[in-house]
Length: 300
Image (cartoon, rainbow, N blue to C red; front, side, top):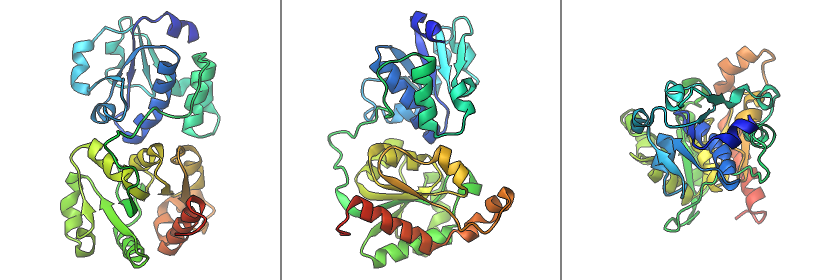
């Protein structure tokens, strides 16, 4: 693969649609760029965060058809419908097929291993290249807690009533919790009067990023916004159903922690079925307190 990379005059990276997967794949993009390679990224996520990824040649999905056959090498995390169409000779590299992905570990470390061992890059970093624009007041609202109570997979979502109760407990501790939901989810959440007063929705991912970046803390499910908060450097607490999933997928850039349900079940299937019951609000609060003390030992 190293030889193919070095000989490719034009390189495209086709991103997954998921926010978290895209932010992780940007680690590879960042390493390619810092080692002198020029490439084009196809991604709605990066397009919407263009000001947060300066200098990236990025196009959205609508522009893929016009770029058919223009690239000597196309890199993907996994196969996508348009990958081969973009490649002039059908040369497509799916990095999940490399040896680094056959050994359990964190996704960032797997991608770094691909950059170093498979692509032969010398100047390596774990960061994905995201930067906070200078008009954003980073963590200006230090008592504000951005909470993401939803996600793309319902089985990974802690119950709404528990998130609302958590927000109420944070208010009692003089924090300002906010519930971030997608516009399409807003109407459902507005029906809960306790949630409605803390609800925030944004049409653009860049506006979500700005809200998170100016917050003091982030709490959320196993979802892409946790990776976004972590990459931005906002202390992040993530709720996971199982330790093995967290080992691979936890947000792992800035300071952060995970919270897991009580280990009541031996069989993995039962853990995944009942984790929402076994993960209590008090354990989430305790984990948040520990994260705060790590960030500020004075406990302010």
